Length: 103
Image 1 (cartoon, one colour):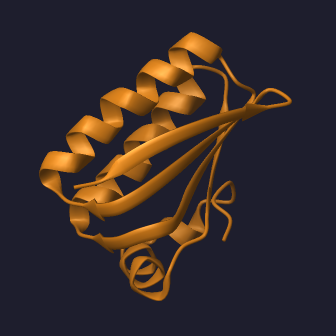
Image 2 (cartoon, rainbow, N blue to C red):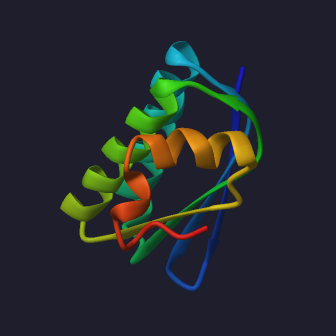
């Protein structure tokens, strides 16, 4: 199961995700992050994956959907702290071609 923690600094919403991201946890994470984006209206959203131990294709959907949601809310979204396994999954999905995603 995944856990999500938030930190707000200088109009940036930092999202720290830990644990495993699968279909069930991705759904819960999505709702939690979206609620914070709507509540705070940050200029930048940074999703940190340093503490993610496993991520399947549901994690890709989570990232892409949050990217689109953040854009629709006027925010930019960045991804950082990807481990080797997560980088591989995202690269296979072609996500690294989106300029706003950073590692």
